[in-house]
Image (cartoon, rainbow, N blue to C red; front, side, top):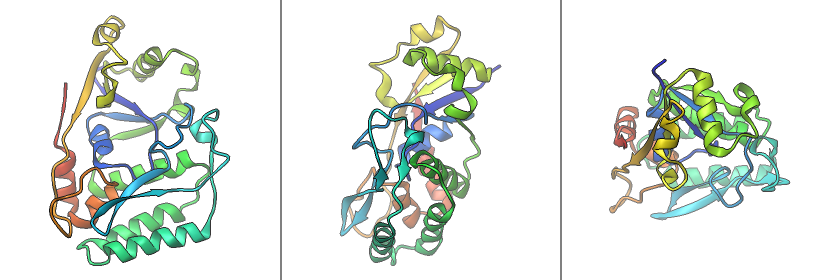
Length: 235
């Protein structure tokens, strides 16, 4: 069956390029049963604070690279959450779409979640729905547990084939890891993302690119955000 699939760790309120990968495929699989990456993007991202990129980091309970992403709980820290939303208010209150986007982010945090994977997945699904991305979402630990233990490339191929698809799309960083010939030899076409981040109007110029999608949505209409998402190629 013709169809395309991507597999990626769940990131909390990720940057624009993550949503380009979501848009590029028919089915997007959250890779939640692989090892957690400390100081990665699973529980962290960046906002615009005083005209510069500012890192926020969601507190976790017992985070370890020996644990799987879906095994790691979020530390319910009321003070941290208050501070996070105070930062949103202080920095974005004058942004054109502040009210809608603040409410969107608040709803994600207020919806019950069981792990950092669950919270991150909720954030991606909420933003996708908000801007009008209609990609199907699946979760590797739920839909493809029997593929666990396979070698990296073989697992990606196995998940694509189990779905009945013929195409796998990988983030741009995987060119050193995977070979097109290896995939095609097993009946799967391999493509890599070529992301393009286009400037959009923030409070000041030049635009600070690569921030959380929260920032994009604060300054852009849903249609404008969707147009920014569409600026990619598959190679």
